[in-house]
Image (cartoon, rainbow, N blue to C red; front, top):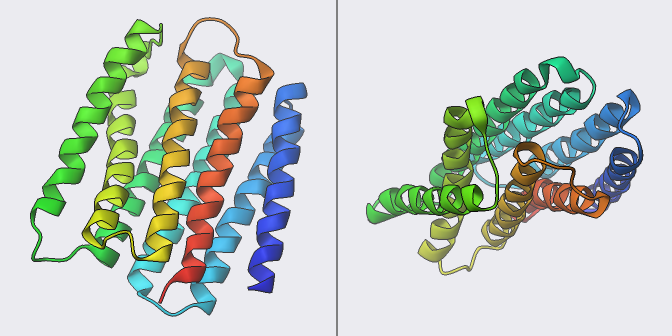
Length: 235
């Protein structure tokens, strides 16, 4: 546990350094800080997975989700540096994060689905469609425009909301009694809060405030570190 706490604290510190660099003056150094912060949540996940008992497939899938999150971080960071091709970097980052969410969803089903409950296969994806549809209606009303990236944005949105809804229904299935599963759901809620704010920063006209940028970044790192740390409570 001591090593996990150290990794958690170092990750939190590095995340704060990244966020400060991001809102003050985004540069190549900012990408370095971002990558290091992301490496810490991957390292935390790996360490927790190694020292705790539990399903190996679940652990591997969750770590793959963390890894693709780190990759998405790195790719999205370049949109601020190579501005002429920013849509390419956004698209690449979007796909990396989408794959991360897919691994999270598979991990949740592998680890916690009970075969006698077939509705718990269907309900998460139906809920994801509903949430995604509501978000698209609201986003248009507040001026968010995905432009040419709309098809990819819809794909990513479905992956994100599927991850959140799957974590919700797996908790419902088990009566919110499994610690690491509840922690994952908390992380998922932070993830969707971060991404909903992020779309406002990326796809809405005008410049967002520094506080706005810092807030969605905090939500994001809380999400990934909580998900990674949840592996400590397997078993």
